[in-house]
Amino acid sequence: MPTALYTRLPVSSAADPAWPTTNLTVDVGGHPVQLAAVHTCYPAGGTRRWAEDLHGLRAAATGRTRNTVMLGDFNATLDHRPMRDLVDTGLADTHEELGAGLFPTWPQDHPDYRVPAVIQIDHVLHGPALEGRAAFVEVETFTSGPTVRLFAPLSVRRRSRIWSVPEMSTP
Image (cartoon, rainbow, N blue to C red; front, top):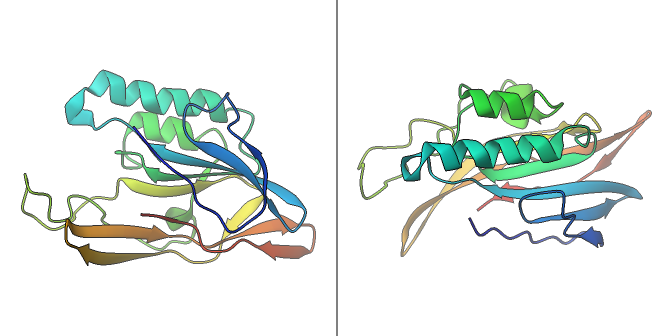
Protein backbone atom coordinates (compact mmCIF):
# COMPACT_ATOMS: atom_id res chain seq x y z
CA MET A 1 0.00 0.00 0.00
CA PRO A 2 1.38 3.47 -0.79
CA THR A 3 2.88 5.41 2.11
CA ALA A 4 4.92 8.57 2.59
CA LEU A 5 7.12 10.12 5.26
CA TYR A 6 7.52 13.84 5.81
CA THR A 7 10.06 15.24 8.24
CA ARG A 8 11.54 18.51 9.43
CA LEU A 9 14.60 16.59 10.65
CA PRO A 10 17.74 16.18 8.53
CA VAL A 11 17.60 12.96 6.49
CA SER A 12 20.87 11.04 6.79
CA SER A 13 19.89 8.15 4.49
CA ALA A 14 16.86 7.07 2.57
CA ALA A 15 15.20 3.88 1.38
CA ASP A 16 16.98 0.99 3.10
CA PRO A 17 15.96 -1.87 0.77
CA ALA A 18 15.73 -4.33 3.69
CA TRP A 19 12.46 -2.67 4.74
CA PRO A 20 9.35 -3.65 2.74
CA THR A 21 7.88 -0.19 3.20
CA THR A 22 8.71 3.50 2.82
CA ASN A 23 11.58 4.32 5.18
CA LEU A 24 14.35 6.76 5.88
CA THR A 25 16.87 7.59 8.58
CA VAL A 26 16.80 10.99 10.26
CA ASP A 27 19.38 12.66 12.47
CA VAL A 28 18.12 13.54 15.95
CA GLY A 29 20.79 15.47 17.82
CA GLY A 30 23.54 13.35 16.27
CA HIS A 31 21.62 10.08 16.70
CA PRO A 32 20.24 8.14 13.74
CA VAL A 33 16.57 7.16 13.99
CA GLN A 34 15.08 4.81 11.39
CA LEU A 35 11.50 5.74 10.41
CA ALA A 36 9.28 3.24 8.60
CA ALA A 37 5.81 4.18 7.38
CA VAL A 38 3.35 1.29 7.51
CA HIS A 39 0.11 0.53 5.71
CA THR A 40 -0.55 -3.19 5.54
CA CYS A 41 -3.12 -4.85 3.35
CA TYR A 42 -6.69 -4.69 4.66
CA PRO A 43 -7.51 -8.16 6.09
CA ALA A 44 -10.86 -8.35 4.27
CA GLY A 45 -8.87 -7.91 1.08
CA GLY A 46 -7.02 -11.13 1.82
CA THR A 47 -5.85 -12.43 5.19
CA ARG A 48 -2.86 -14.17 3.59
CA ARG A 49 -1.59 -10.91 2.09
CA TRP A 50 -2.27 -9.08 5.38
CA ALA A 51 -0.28 -11.67 7.37
CA GLU A 52 2.52 -11.61 4.76
CA ASP A 53 2.76 -7.82 5.13
CA LEU A 54 3.15 -8.12 8.90
CA HIS A 55 5.60 -11.05 8.60
CA GLY A 56 7.65 -8.98 6.12
CA LEU A 57 7.85 -6.14 8.63
CA ARG A 58 8.87 -8.60 11.35
CA ALA A 59 11.62 -10.08 9.14
CA ALA A 60 12.99 -6.59 8.41
CA ALA A 61 12.76 -5.50 12.06
CA THR A 62 14.47 -8.54 13.59
CA GLY A 63 17.82 -7.38 15.01
CA ARG A 64 17.28 -3.81 13.78
CA THR A 65 14.78 -2.31 16.20
CA ARG A 66 17.03 -0.41 18.62
CA ASN A 67 16.55 3.02 17.03
CA THR A 68 13.49 2.26 14.87
CA VAL A 69 10.08 3.92 14.73
CA MET A 70 7.36 2.13 12.77
CA LEU A 71 4.16 4.11 12.46
CA GLY A 72 0.95 3.90 10.53
CA ASP A 73 -2.00 1.69 9.71
CA PHE A 74 -1.05 -1.88 10.65
CA ASN A 75 -4.66 -3.04 10.17
CA ALA A 76 -4.12 -5.07 13.33
CA THR A 77 -4.66 -4.83 17.05
CA LEU A 78 -2.13 -5.96 19.63
CA ASP A 79 -4.33 -9.05 20.01
CA HIS A 80 -3.48 -10.30 16.51
CA ARG A 81 -0.71 -12.90 16.52
CA PRO A 82 1.29 -11.43 13.58
CA MET A 83 1.23 -8.03 15.30
CA ARG A 84 2.42 -9.54 18.60
CA ASP A 85 5.21 -11.32 16.69
CA LEU A 86 6.29 -7.95 15.24
CA VAL A 87 6.26 -6.25 18.65
CA ASP A 88 8.25 -9.19 20.09
CA THR A 89 11.24 -8.23 17.88
CA GLY A 90 12.05 -5.60 20.51
CA LEU A 91 9.51 -2.91 19.72
CA ALA A 92 7.14 -1.20 22.13
CA ASP A 93 3.70 0.14 21.29
CA THR A 94 3.91 3.72 22.57
CA HIS A 95 0.30 3.86 23.77
CA GLU A 96 0.64 0.56 25.63
CA GLU A 97 4.05 1.55 27.07
CA LEU A 98 2.56 4.71 28.56
CA GLY A 99 -0.52 2.92 29.88
CA ALA A 100 -2.54 5.36 27.79
CA GLY A 101 -5.40 2.94 27.24
CA LEU A 102 -7.32 2.11 24.12
CA PHE A 103 -7.29 4.65 21.30
CA PRO A 104 -9.94 3.45 18.84
CA THR A 105 -8.99 4.40 15.29
CA TRP A 106 -11.30 2.18 13.17
CA PRO A 107 -13.90 2.30 11.75
CA GLN A 108 -14.15 6.06 11.96
CA ASP A 109 -17.44 6.77 10.18
CA HIS A 110 -16.48 4.17 7.56
CA PRO A 111 -19.13 4.19 4.80
CA ASP A 112 -19.55 0.39 5.02
CA TYR A 113 -19.93 0.18 8.80
CA ARG A 114 -21.53 3.44 10.07
CA VAL A 115 -20.36 2.92 13.65
CA PRO A 116 -17.88 4.87 15.72
CA ALA A 117 -14.27 3.73 16.01
CA VAL A 118 -14.06 0.75 18.37
CA ILE A 119 -10.60 -0.81 17.83
CA GLN A 120 -7.06 0.51 17.45
CA ILE A 121 -5.38 -0.62 14.21
CA ASP A 122 -3.05 2.38 13.88
CA HIS A 123 0.10 2.27 16.00
CA VAL A 124 3.41 3.96 16.75
CA LEU A 125 6.00 1.28 17.59
CA HIS A 126 9.51 2.14 18.72
CA GLY A 127 12.75 0.45 19.74
CA PRO A 128 14.52 0.54 23.11
CA ALA A 129 16.74 3.53 22.17
CA LEU A 130 13.56 5.61 22.22
CA GLU A 131 10.86 6.26 24.77
CA GLY A 132 7.33 7.58 24.56
CA ARG A 133 6.54 10.90 26.22
CA ALA A 134 2.83 11.15 25.46
CA ALA A 135 0.12 9.53 23.35
CA PHE A 136 -3.17 10.88 22.09
CA VAL A 137 -5.63 10.77 19.20
CA GLU A 138 -7.24 13.63 17.29
CA VAL A 139 -10.13 13.37 14.87
CA GLU A 140 -10.35 15.93 12.06
CA THR A 141 -13.16 16.13 9.55
CA PHE A 142 -12.25 16.85 5.94
CA THR A 143 -14.55 16.97 2.91
CA SER A 144 -13.73 13.29 2.33
CA GLY A 145 -14.80 12.45 5.90
CA PRO A 146 -13.26 12.12 9.36
CA THR A 147 -9.56 11.30 9.66
CA VAL A 148 -7.99 9.93 12.82
CA ARG A 149 -4.50 11.13 13.71
CA LEU A 150 -2.49 9.18 16.22
CA PHE A 151 0.24 11.16 17.99
CA ALA A 152 3.15 9.78 19.99
CA PRO A 153 5.99 12.22 20.75
CA LEU A 154 9.20 10.27 21.40
CA SER A 155 12.61 10.98 22.94
CA VAL A 156 15.95 9.38 22.14
CA ARG A 157 17.57 7.82 25.20
CA ARG A 158 21.24 8.70 25.62
CA ARG A 159 22.93 7.78 28.86
CA SER A 160 21.68 10.38 31.34
CA ARG A 161 20.48 12.84 28.66
CA ILE A 162 17.30 12.58 26.62
CA TRP A 163 17.17 14.10 23.14
CA SER A 164 13.72 15.14 21.95
CA VAL A 165 12.17 13.98 18.71
CA PRO A 166 9.44 16.26 17.33
CA GLU A 167 5.91 14.83 17.37
CA MET A 168 5.39 11.98 14.94
CA SER A 169 1.91 11.10 13.80
CA THR A 170 -0.03 9.01 11.35
CA PRO A 171 -2.37 10.98 9.11
